[in-house]
Length: 393
Image 1 (cartoon, one colour):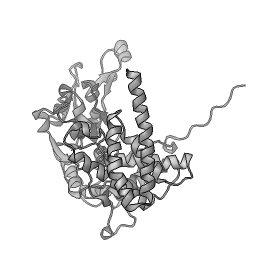
Image 2 (tube, helix red, strand yellow):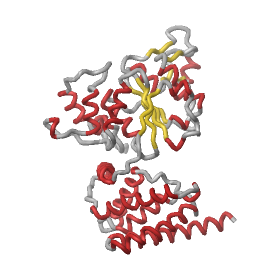
Image 3 (cartoon, rainbow, N blue to C red):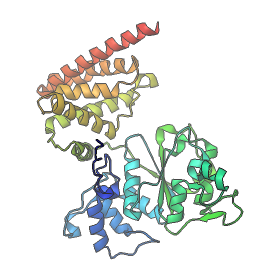
Image 4 (cartoon, rainbow, N blue to C red):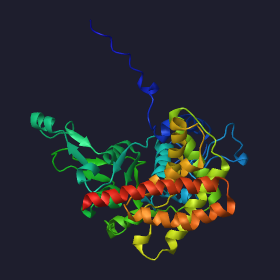
């Protein structure tokens, strides 16, 4: 007997593992649209002033009927310059170290300005010009020849047609000749399609622009040409060094990530202090190190702290007593930061016995358990490194 397939949910009701910003904050965006009386450039959904409000959150002086949560914890001047750039004739290039929130800021900007942050090209060593401009539906080309119907526009070309923002992640990971495919989009604001005899130019609608991101650590991999640099405004996203701001970021993002599992947990302030202080000490040790071999491969970013904390909380929920424990936090930190065997194990082990042990002796409490958990995790890693070394021989 045939079984009846389960009824599918309407598209709007389907859960998404990671909804884009315009879906996650749809209620906020709708509210801001309803109260926005300020002038708007081009076809922007929100004015620059309200885009800033959406990203940086509301203050009591704004006198709004509902609070707007802060989503990006950074310098307000940086956000303002990014917004102004997108209202100009130049593209926006967000550049900074890994984990500084470049992609998140780009997504928030696109969500607030045009209501669509999903037109994205991910830059890799395998990205080709077709990914930036257009490609062809081979089956339709064989059947009917090259035409507008058989053309497959790239996300950036689609954003040109719609007059919205296109995003280009990790621009400097692409080869230079692929990068330069952006020049006509940013300068002439059109893309030619020489394969078509008629109507073979796609012009950008008002409101089109490009937000690109680039890793500061990738400099020298595929440097931008001078011609392309001139068509971008560079906005530097600095590493967060203020522990108060970093605490807010880690707490906010961890709570959002844990909400996917339908539970929340209050991180003990003392344990969050231990995590923040350990990363601060690791950064200081990395800065003082004169050789590259003596530094961890990890960027020691705020994003990595979030991953460590989320991992420790989930471990406690699924395999512990639902509490966040110092020793589990230490094991998560070691597991996240050890990437090279045995180099990172050696660096972390030296740090643990010199710095963490000292703090445990001075402060006791959670630091003692944190020290113990890290030593145990490093001991396991050392055995794995030794085992992998024997196999290599």
